[in-house]
Image (cartoon, each protein chain N blue to C red):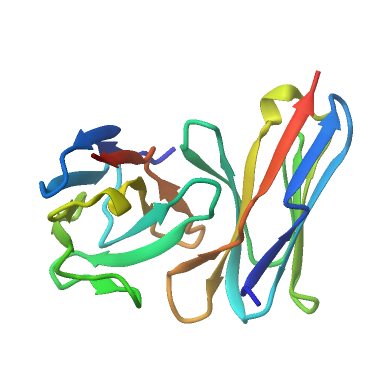
Length: 109
Length: 116
């Protein structure tokens, strides 16, 4: 079993729909990252969470430390949101990240 | 925001040659940088941790003599793929953590390597 599991693996939705991507992890962490990777390969860090909830524009990320679970939400989705979204956790005591397998999101106009 | 650059962005080389990839932090100092490899439709896999002023730390299964890492300064780390083979063809990405209480990871744009 991977230390970081994401679901779904693939998600296709219509423009405007509310999107939720889930991430579960099995180790103690100091922080959790949500990353966005576009088809060209470049990666952008969207959020870093250690507790609670963060919001940036149409993106919301939440984390429940007790349940070892995080969600990334996208409101009013747009075709430009199409990308691979990756959850990564930083274990306690080191700076290394362990990555989930990613969720490929496609938003259809 | 902080920027991490990589050079080259893509490279095609013949089998047996060596390829050097540079990772630079452009507006912050990074005592630590990370090198990842990503095969098609797979997630990132950490190869090694590059430490300024000391030896790199390699993940299990990564050959340190094949993937040479040099963290020459607080803003530059290089990964050299020695005697490259077609199976080394991959997307190589570096990242650097920012300092401070709101530490986050800044990723380079990646280097696509194709070994013929």
